[in-house]
Amino acid sequence: MRITVWDLPLRLFHWLLVLCVAGALLTINLGASWIDWHGRFGLAVLGLIAFRLAWGVLGSTHSRFASFFPGPGAIARYCRGQWQGPGHNPLGALSVYALLGLFAVQAVSGLFTSDEIAFSGPLSRAVSSSTVNTLSSWHRQTELWLYLLVGLHILAIIAYRLRGKRLVGPMIHGQVEVDAPVKAPRGGGVLAFVVALLVALAVVWLANGSWIPTPPPAPAPAW
Figure (cartoon, rainbow, N blue to C red):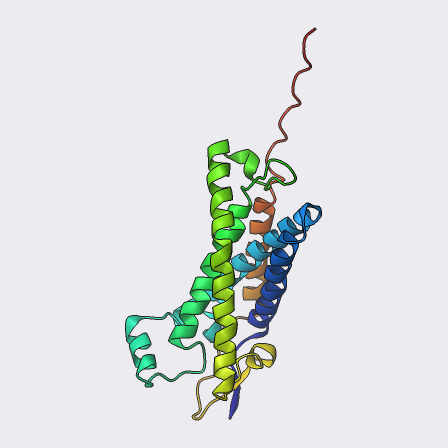
């Protein structure tokens, strides 16, 4: 039998995150003329991560972090082939946490980066130059880890497909096949969606730096 596991907000989040991460990776490699778009994609990623964190508390059953926390016991049962469940398996849950964490680090550090030529992050004016230099270094160094984790995620999808298990389809239509009846997901209604969306919008507004006072112009030189 087929049941709906992934709710619509989660599926929209997933594909919008794919689009924005791909856009950020593409524009950073297209040269300085695309750097502003890289920053916009980064802001979008941060807003999406904020939405997912809120939805991980307010969303429907299988969207909640508590429903797929990868404890040692669950990981051991999965490795022995004894784990069963309609949502994320324990290794998939580890991948979710790792990707969300890395995307968050990349997006937040990007707010404070500066190349001193073409781009300064929207919050770089709020911290010291040494902090900007440190976070700029982190932003560049963690890019390789991002490629690595995304590559592993894609390889896992391919490996599961070769074993006859489709992971992409359920993230489009939200349904999976189960052998035994399970409880229908609960929660994640309209009010929860509105609250999560407001959280995401508030985070994007804080991250865009519009609230930081514009520094006064430098005084004219005395002659």
